[in-house]
Length: 264
Image 1 (spheres, rainbow, N blue to C red):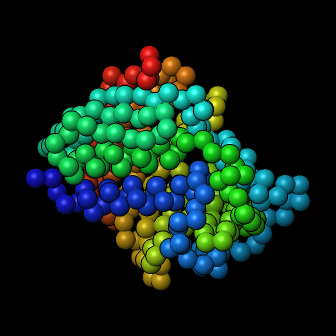
Image 2 (cartoon, rainbow, N blue to C red):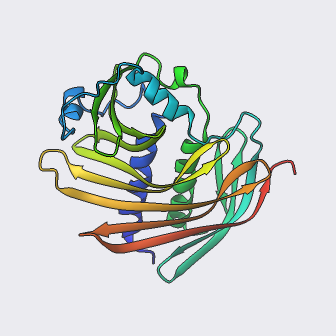
Image 3 (tube, one colour):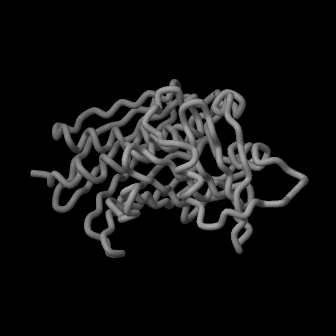
């Protein structure tokens, strides 16, 4: 039987990242568990503000938001064969991403494995969905934070029910911070792929800490490989790794083959 670890750890990784990154693409009225703006401000180790008078915090964030690679409105969806590996187990099935961004996973009899594939695809779709900035971040206010030694700028975002802290460098979102319940969650972008239509995060690490003690609760990493099929960059391989004390403690792998755009 597949270890309970997958359900408790990798599944939680998908939930954390989907919730955090959904704020980049969707209105976030339902995310009521995010804690106060003051708590997020305290996450900053340097409280000095950027003094760049020529560009606002909102414009810095907008540029990075619009620089992400997303699928255009003509995206037709696609199908593929999927192979999900965990330990000595391998599960094969089929996936379908529809033009409306809905996800279907069929042919995998093990329900836990099927859910893990589905969760990973839903997380990927959140990244690729294109939503205008003024719709995704309606009624939000932005404030400049510190600029670190590498030139990355902190941006604090506050909405009616949600708050976040970002780090932006070279028009790229390199860090996202949110508090979810009793957890402070950070997503760090470690590697990117530049395309003519924007950049893709190809490796990122999610760290969940206990809000009061700052003790690390979970630490996971996703490494993604994209290839261009027709006019679109599509996920071909994903490796998920869990860490403890800086060492890999578990991993899973998804491979996608026979990728076909719908209607082709």
